[in-house]
Length: 450
Image (cartoon, rainbow, N blue to C red; front, side, top):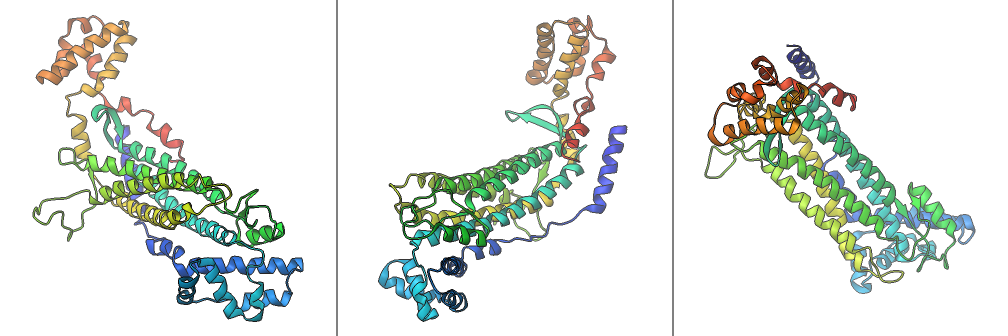
């Protein structure tokens, strides 16, 4: 059949192009963004740039700015040592920088409040984390495109309420995932734009102690936007939007993983996670092949959704600032970005190596003895002149005989006296054709350039 020829052509072409996903970004790379060393280095760059801006304004000597750039250094251990006395991390950090710079160190942090430095550095780090996540999403997108085309013409049963409905193809399932990931990519881009922002506007956001030029200069050099307005803090609706975006993406993976978990059930087994030769599914049951990675994805999605809730709680701060959000963000921002990075790279491997069983999909299509063709039969009866409500009842009563008593659906249809007044046996049999349900597959795929 022409349909099967198309499917064969696609499979042969893809066999030549098949590749294994290479993890360009790992948990370790995302983790480096959140190390103390990297955070303090980012804070240091904010301080240096602020000093350069002050020099351009003539508020400090140009030589002092140059010395700050050249000599600014820190030791994490020394910061901790001073913080043990001051109980203020940024104050300790500034003291360490000043110690290492020497006489010009007195100009470090001029006119700044701690949150000017902290929130601006955080905007840089979240931009970096966003870039990693966008790379992850793009890598996943490419795998979905390849595997969707691979199974473009592989019929399988579509389920609604968990019950057999009509035929679809496994490629269309994956195309649905692809569309969602493409929306997630756009969400992530918007979240990156929202969060890649800095502020250097002083204790309550009025620039009372610092020229607005400093904020503009620093943010431009760092490659982030300047907030149009701030209090002492950047407003936390930005961070809530970022975290809820991560939660939506994690929920997408949760959805996909849940589908695979069902398909891997023993009674179904239309697809399953790759199971390596030395892998063990159970300490006591040697036969087990469990969807453990997909289960892990579902669990981590719950965690990230919980972090999103915490970010929403951080939006309402007292007046121009309190620090109730600070302790929360020290946990939820590193954890959620690292967790989502792990989820994306790991689930990309799952889909890349997913074992798919077209023969079982075909068997399951026929599991109900042709009941899935009832919509085609109903529409054809109406086209032949039957009243739709009557036609529905004619088809339904024969379908119920199959459900309840296991009788042959097709043979009962042929013997039905009401149906016989409208359709002959050949016309009835012609309705039992899976390809009638799949005639628009090419159209749907063309919308993705596939």
